[in-house]
Image 1 (cartoon, rainbow, N blue to C red):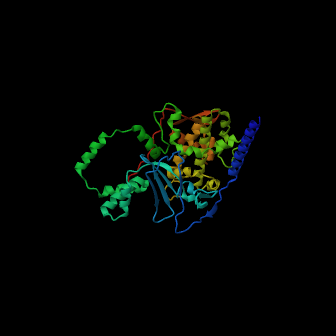
Image 2 (cartoon, rainbow, N blue to C red):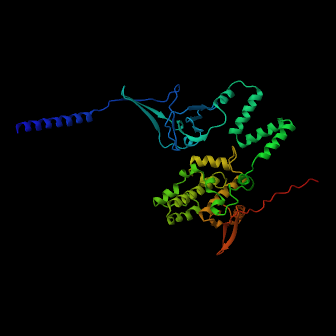
Image 3 (cartoon, helix red, strand yellow):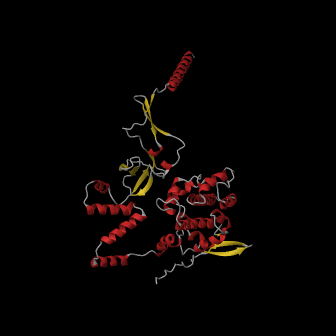
Length: 418
């Protein structure tokens, strides 16, 4: 019995020692000194890049490059090339998120456990790069470096021509093509070879129709052979994949039970928000809410670049991704107001989305007030999209008819002199 008591006592002492040892380990703290490093003109501040696409950089990248403009050193472009991939991730400091209003500041902390030092370095908003996936261009890094060296006049002109075709604006590309055509001499052999190559090319008529749509009719890309109205103007070609995450404001307001303000949203949108409460399918509900938000941004962009609507839209917040795309699609370089043909193109985008919201049969009355136009003026726009009009209880309605049939385009005749 005494032996048993001694064994129990030893076991109790051992358990108490273990618990005391664990308590001591819990009480141990890491003592560090914090050092804040401020910006220094002679040193480069840290850069932060992140992948919003979900790309996981599991292995080391094959190349990380930082480019600066000589005339504007603050403009930087960061590129990351994954190993064995045809995609390169590109981020810049002069467009997208870095140009938006930054409500908070960022810092990068590095803890050195051996020295017990935590270094905190501030990171400016224009040093945070959103790395978007892009296909690798045809030119290589060696070709880039060649442009920096001494080139002969012909070689330099050729390099400039190639880069203009890759990255230039439509106006600069057209100018280069005209200059090249003027310099070329007539070569019958090369012309015959060109004719043979053209005959071998398979022509995609549907692609040509869709591409020419924005030029001749000023309407979104369409499918003339569609038998379902939903396929006549594909929604994915109007609202791009990367834009959907930035147009969820109306869905969030409805989910919180808040009202959509008539001061911030157009009349057409406010009167259709009730549809979101009737839809049970989450995907259909989210899609409709995003379309209503996209209509709002389109209308506000038109007002912002119009003389009569600037005041009502100057405080509207555009997601940077939409601001960039709308500027490229509906504006001319260095222009303050939208030209007539670009206004027509924007109106066509709005009307197609309105048809989508109203199951492809809508009254032009509500959207006409938002566009600051009369329903009679909008009739020609709807007809140009392939709609037919009818009266229901003395209210005009435009219905999209498939397959699409467009009215003939009228061209002005040039009067001769004399």
